[in-house]
Image: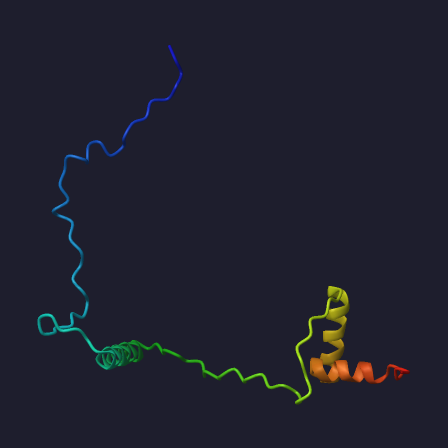
Length: 126
């Protein structure tokens, strides 16, 4: 006798059944439109805005708030000066960490911190 496992189908008793009793739920807020009409982007935006307003009102009536944190836009990063260019530099992580801490302690941006460090180097003889 072999000890090879036999494959069995755990759903064999269900295969003969029909799934007619399964149906998707109807939408919570059905949107009634004319037959064959597609919402325009403006209509869809208005509908989303109305739905958001309804949800916000319901939340406030239930004692909750939505978007209770002020949204502050992230400031755009501006170049420190006109004469800059992107340069990749390979550094040890520990050196970079020390540089970042030093810049933070002195209130320097990375650009300003690098400028302060390089200004202490002797001038190059040509």
